[in-house]
Image 1 (cartoon, rainbow, N blue to C red):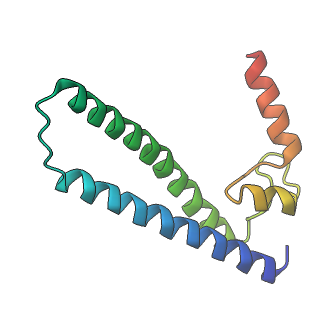
Image 2: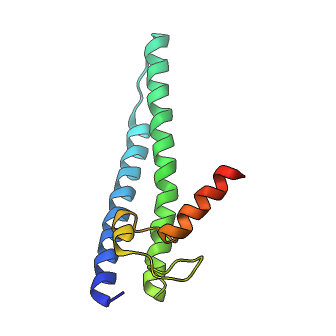
Image 3: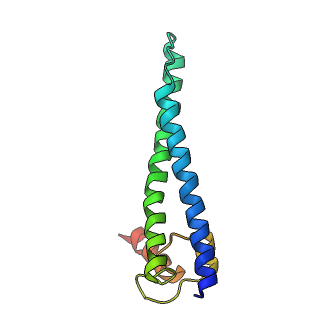
Length: 118
């Protein structure tokens, strides 16, 4: 992959990382600032359900942040865009769709097939 494409993917990943970190910070501040008191159990349950949903989303985003950081590290080391299984180049379209990917489409398909079987 040429340097221009690497720079483009680095920018995309850095923007995603910044957005995720900003959203996580906002969630934390909103949850700690919110001192709502709901005497109605239904309202309280609804608030708790919403918070649990928000926390599940943030947990998924936390894992994505780790993957983004790993992808940025791969860019720095020159391993970005190389399948960790077969060591072939990962297609540019696949990287555009999921820049944190570590597997080419063939290896990912095989991995998913094995997961279904086992």
